[in-house]
Length: 141
Image 1 (cartoon, rainbow, N blue to C red):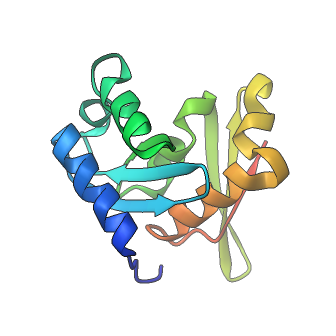
Image 2 (image 1 turned 180 degrees about the vertical axis):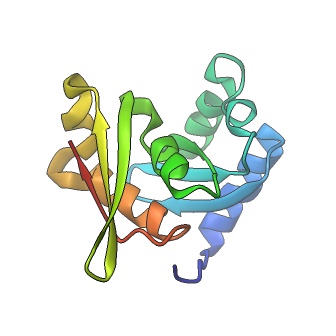
Image 3 (image 1 turned 45 degrees about the vertical axis):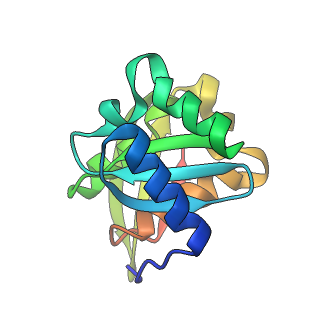
């Protein structure tokens, strides 16, 4: 797990997010089309807001899709939280030599979305997970 550093833009997004949601951001990752926020455990639904109002407001203010993930100290739970929008059926962690691999089984109907175009969503998920837990690779089943 590497040190997390934020750009000025990312810090502005975090400040805006915390102001609008009243929650604490543990991590924020900016990609071309979306902002991924990791909030403290137990703050996920508060961050999203009633009927997603906070996410909608943030999307309008930033012109980016907003993805909220609730933090967990438990690696398996955290991986499940990262993929929560894809109806996770199971998460299996295994040691493969000197790396830890997670296999996430999702609803087959949304497997393509979980992986994303050219594996984009999976790459983002891998990066966010590896920033918080000792898991270096993830596959979607």
